[in-house]
Structures are given as structure tokens and as C-alpha cells.
Image (tube, rainbow, N blue to C red):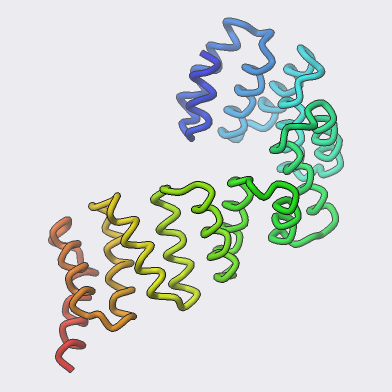
Length: 250
């Protein structure tokens, strides 16, 4: 039950994971791993006190169980108690110094406490853990949110180099290229993505707008027609075909 619950939590199926983990803890209330996983489930539901209680119970069961201190530290961080977060994460690192993810959390926390900008904190952590796809993704998402297009391009390129074949990342890299003014490279990423998602209307919209930006009007119209095969009433595609058609005649 614990392993099933953890699997569901890891894949974002929090309610299903929560039910399995309640059963796992009921079957063995002295399993610290199950307690930590149940704490994660509570946290995903916004039940902060219940989550903290599970992490503390895991520590009561095994006071050398590093994941409990790590998760408790992250919970303190989310609650704004940076000093308690530092203590818990430092203890987790001391218990499991080879656990890279926990050390990354501590580096990011110390950077936050020192007022270091978030993107710089990610770079500091990446200097120590350059293979962490979690960090590269965090840096890429931060850069996109803050319209730092060149940095987003670099991060998504690195992410795809280390974790190739993730269709969503082709789209995100395409978006970053497009916003950085690199329409040709954006087009190639969208093509890679649509090869694996033939019924994704938003992807065809991205292809259409990028073709249009490159002056390839016939190809842009073709993408709009592909959208209409999927949804004959798509107003955006119908409108764009009219606009693109007039542009082709000028």
C-alpha cells in the first residue's frame, strides 16, 4: 500500500495516493516511510498541521530517518519559518550527506535567507549538481515566468540534452525560442512535439503563428486547416485562415 500510495503521489494523483497511504499507515503505524508519504499527501491537500504531525511521528519512530527532516524542513520553508527550515534541512543533510536532492534544498534555502535572487540560487545549486534535471527545469520555468528568454532557452536545451524525448519540453523550448526572436528554431521544436501529439490544437496554433512569422503563409494556412479537421468550429482557426488568405493575396 505504501509503495502504491507513493507512486500515485509522485505522479500527481494525490487523492488516490492519500487513500492508499491511509491504509498503509493503518496496517503498519510504525513505518516512517509511510508516515512521510502520508504527510506529503496531507500537504498536497493543504492540511499543513496534519502533514507536520506525520513528519514528526516519522521522526519519533526513527530519529535518523533523513526524508522526514527534509520534508519537515520544506514544510517550515513554505510556512515562512526559514530558521526552522534550515535546522531541519541541515539535519537531513548530516544524516544523509550523499542525498543530492536534500543538499539542493538546503542550498536554495540558504540562498533565499541571504536574499540571493532565485535564478542565481538555481545557478549556485547547479554548479554543485549540474546533472539535476529538477534544477534545470526549475531554472527554465523561473526564466519563462520572468521573461528571461535567453536563459529559458539555455535551460530547456540543457534539460532536453539530459532528458531527451519529453514532448512537453519541445513545446516549452519552442516557446522560449519564439519569444527570443528565433522563429526558425522554434518551428523545429514544434514539429518534433506535434509528431507525438497529432491532436493538440494549441500546437497547431503555435505552428501556424510561427510559419506566419517566417512568411510561410501557405504552411500557416495548412496548420489552421489541420485544426479545423479536429474542430470544424474553431473560431480562431477560421479567423486566421481569412486573415492569412488576405495576406497571401496582397
